[in-house]
Amino acid sequence: MFGICNLSVVPCRAEASDRSEMVTQLLFGERFKILEEGSNWIRIKISWDGYECWIGSKQYLPLSGVAYMELEKAATINSFELVQVISSGNSAHMLPILLGSTLPNYKNKTFSIEKSHYTYDGLTTEKATLKSRAALIENAFLYLNAPYLWGGRNPFGIDCSGFTQMVFMLNGMKLRRDAFQQAEEGETLSFLEEAEEGDLAFFDNEDGKIIHVGIILKDNRIIHASGKVRIDSIDHEGIFNAEIQKYSHRLRLIKRIL
Image: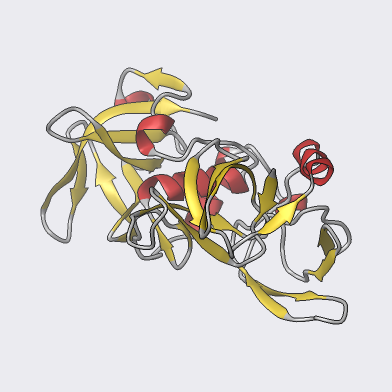
């Protein structure tokens, strides 16, 4: 059994309850496997990153196995801005599409999900320069000042690992969902001096657990989601927040993904 997100954004919970914490979000067009069905909730495994979570049973569109496999094989095209899409047919309606949403079967400003057809007249990653450090940083700045939201993955609310995941997605690259998972990917660098723009810096807590991640910029700076997506200074000790005049995060390791 398979499904696809047909809403702008859907909260994904740790447990099958509205009171459970939101651990991530589905954006429009993202597909998944259904692992378990309940009366009001379904447990899913998201195709893009393998993340498992619960969503409301009224907040998705069932997808046939054939359609799911076709989308798995197709190139992923993402929206590059916030735009309204227009569905066609007897039940035509407007729907806001967030930055980073997936446009299934996109071609010539149209895309489709099963029997539903949409018109999208915005920028996409189809013609973007992918897998370059310059493009990665440009993508990161699209989220600048987005408010912090635990489990968020969009410009209206995003967390640290959701931020890095979405930036790399717009650049045609996959990252896993959580910071500690992302820290297992790529090549480990020995010193901060070796880091280049676009590398990832990870930070831990007193117990040594990875709890934060950001993208390194030039001139000993870092862009990361902390309160909001912001730019701070970084050195061997960690992130220094000039507004509060102290270190906010302790540096643990640096990884090169690109």
